[in-house]
Amino acid sequence: MQQLFEGVYMLEGDVGGRPLQLMYLRGDMASILWDTGCTKDPERFILTQMWEAGGDPSGLTWIINSHPDLDHTGGNHLMKRLAPQSLLACGDADRVVCSGPEELMRLRYDRYRRDHGLLYDGDGRQGVLQQSGQAQPIETTFAGGEHIRLSSDWEVEIIALPGHARGHLGILDAKHQSLYGADAIHGEVYYGFDGLPKMPPTYLWADDYLATIRLIEHLPITTYVGCHWPIKRGEEIGAFCAESRRFVQHADHLLLAALAEPMTLRDACLHLGPALGAWPREVDLELMYALHANLESLVQRGVVSATGRDGQGHIVFARGGTA
Image (cartoon, rainbow, N blue to C red; front, side, top):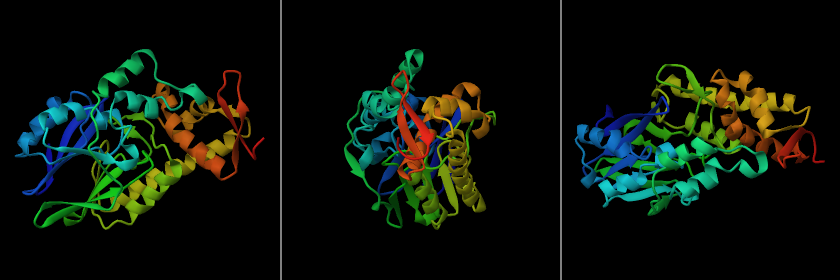
C-alpha cells in the first residue's frame, strides 16, 4: 500500500504477474474503493491494505468499477459481503457487463467468437470465469460529470474515459491535481513485475480511445495513476499519452499495408504482432481487441472494407471500398 496524498491510497496487488493497483479514497464524509480486483482479491490484499490505511469496510461508502474486466469487477460479490452498506456503481454503458461473470464472458471476452473465431476455450475460459467472481447487481451508474464530496474541503469528479470500455470511468481529484484513470490508456504495452513486456494494449473502440487520450493531455493534473503502469507525474503524463496514441497510429499504418491482401482478424494479429510489440508471441492473439478496434475505425472511414467470409465463416478484411 502506498499513500499518495492525504486520504489517497494505492492498494497494491497482482494479476498474471503484472501490477494491479486499486485506489482507496478516504475522507471524513465518504470513501471510495476504486475497483475490486479478481474473485478473491478483497480478502487477498484489499481488506488488509484498507486497514493499513486506517479504513474499515464497515465505513466504506462507494465501490465503483472503472470498467468491466475480471481484474476490476471480479471481487464485487465478496466486497459487497464485506461492506454491505456500500453502493456498487459503474459506468452507465457498462451496467450489464459489470453485473456478473456470464455477462462479462458473453459481452467482453467472447465478443469475437462468432465473426472471428477468436475465443477463450478450455482452461482459458474456465480461468476467466473463476477470476470473474459471482454475479452482483450494480446499484447505481455514472455517465460522467457527477461529483462526490469526501470531506468538507475535498470533492472528486467522476469523468467519462471511454475507449477501453464504452462506460470507462475515471476519478478527477482537483484537490490533488490527480486523475485516477484505471485502464483508460495503455501506452504501448503491459509490463510485468519483472520489467518484461507481457501483453499488448486492449482498447476496444479506437476513436473513443484517441479522444480520451486528448482529454487526459489537457486536464489540469500533475499526477496520473493507472492500474497496471507506474505512476506518471508532470511531463511523464504527456509522454504516456503520446505513447498510447503512437500505438494506435502504428497499428493503423501496419494494417493498411498488410490489407493489400485480404485477411481475417486472426491473420492480422499473428502477422502484425512481432512488429507491434515484444510481448511473448503466444499472446499475439490478445491483439484481437486493439486490432478489431482499429479495423472498425478504418471501415467507418471507408479505407478498409469487410469483403466477405472465409471457409470457416470468419470476416475477411481488405483495403479499399466495400465489395
